[in-house]
Structures are given as structure tokens and as C-alpha cells.
Image 1: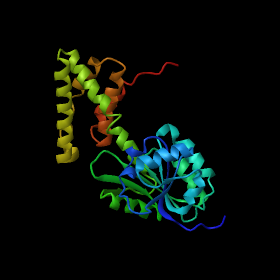
Image 2: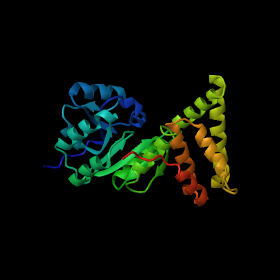
Image 3: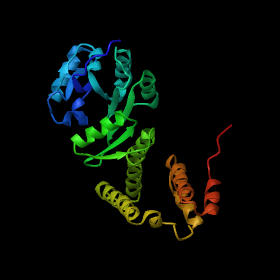
Image 4: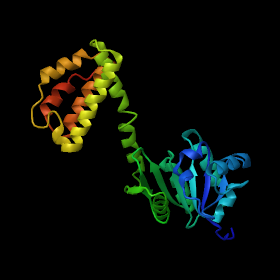
Length: 277
């Protein structure tokens, strides 16, 4: 394929609400965003209008005119947009592909690296004025430039660890919120009103978070004292299934995480439900 003169720093391909990505917040410098592609010209026009930058193109082939391609799509459309881009007539050698504020598997990124692309991930994650970056040059350098243009603090993680970082986000959000909900539910079961139960649950969790922020693992309840195993067994017994086993496992996981109290862990592990044969 003949080389095409680069006419824009960034090309964009995407789907869904592109305005929710940091791409829409990029300063509108002349020719900074050029071709904008989607599954159709109509979709591309909608995306360009939401960005108020760039120009809609009929084919993803035209993204070849940009030195870096910004990719954004909701989870249910990532594979379709990736397939569209993969089929495009693009000279990938030395081309940067940056996945912006979206969930993309390592397998998808590896397919583009196999074509010769340099890839990076740039993800806002709920902390104001901060963005996570993962990738390799030259895509990583482009991602840092994006962060600079957006005046965001860049947190660069080790190459290939964006999935682990995403797991942290799930652990501290999607997997954590139900624990608050369960604590509030248990407080309601002992007679507290809904509003009071929710307030107490969030206050208790918030206090634990603040204490960990201040003292680290030394703030853990059993850091310096042996747990009363009989008391823990009674507390576990007081919880109804299916949460009972998770409650027990969370306590044991704490012993494992901080490498403490192996005897208590052994006792509680004896309570693991037996799997019916």
C-alpha cells in the first residue's frame, strides 16, 4: 500500500456516546482531529458533530491519514468496531492506536500489534484530573501528549497491566458496593430504619477506608491482636446463606493478605461448605 501523507494528528473511530470520553474534551486545535469514522457515514457524522471537531468519512480506510487513531466504543460494540478497523486499508507500521475510555481485551490489542500498530490504553477512572496510561512507544508518547493537552495527571502502569488496573476498579466499585448494601441490609434486620441503616453502613465503611489511608495495614482490626475465633464463628453462624460463606471467606482472605493468624484461618476453613458429589 502506498504511503499517504499525514494530514491530521488524530483520527477517531467509535460508536456510542463519544461525548462521554475524554476525546470530546480535547482542545479544538486546527487539524488536530481529522477523519472520524463509524459503522456508516451517518454514524460518523453524528460522532463528528458530538466532538465538534474533525470530519466524517465514509470508510475507515481514511484514518490512514492520521498519525494516531483514537478508539472508543461501549462494551457491546467494541468487537464490531475493532473488526471494522482491522479490515481497513491502513498502513499500521509506526501508527499509534489508543483505546480511550473503553474496555478492550488484550486479545484485541494483540491483533493490532500483529499488524504492526503501536497500542496504548488511556482510561479515566473516577479520580478527578487523573488518567491511567498503559502501552508502548510511540502510542504511549501520544497518550502522554493527550493527557498533557487535557491537563490531566498521568498514572502510567507497567506495560500490559491495564487488565489488573481494571480489576482494581471493579474490586473498589462493583464488587465493593454490594458489601455496603449487605451491611445496610443486616442493620435493617436488627431493627434499624432504611435511612439510618444506609447512613451507618456508609459511615463504618468510610471510617475503615480513612484509617487504612492513614495507617495502612496497621489499621486492620487484627493486625496486633489475635482474633477471637469462637466469636468469629458465632458471627458467621448468625449470617444467612448465601452471604455466610462469602463473609467467612472475606475474613480468611484478610488473614492470608496480611500473612497473619494461620491457626484462626485453619479453623475457619474447616467451615467451608462441602460440595455434594
